[in-house]
Image 1: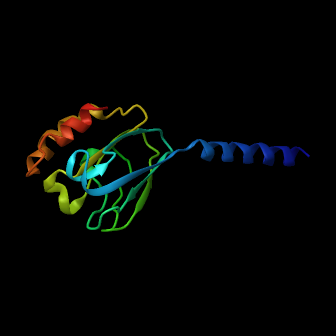
Image 2: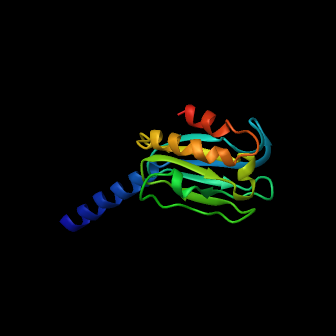
Image 3: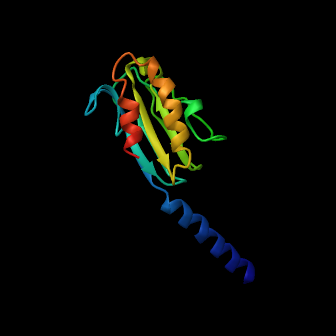
Length: 147
């Protein structure tokens, strides 16, 4: 009986943890609220354990983490061109991601997980990164300032 109770409690704990996780969707778009070549929504605040699905709404896009603009030790991702990709975020911090072929057009997005303890470091790194943008050079700063 004790074993059965332990298994029941363990199962409830596992189930309740996954039931609390949220799922979000970010569209990869040619045109959106913030102009051309955008992720929408471009800024998300989520909790550890939540997942985000990047939807290839328009063709020719991908979602890829920017290794130098995420929490130290966090696992990055690289979605295939024109394919949806789902990422689960387990580590607190701010993550900046890009559409690789449209980075020069500032096709970037930001996800804050938990308290986002690395926000200031990300803002500093953004200063150098936005120099590569051929258009919408303030887009990344604008997104980071929404956090």
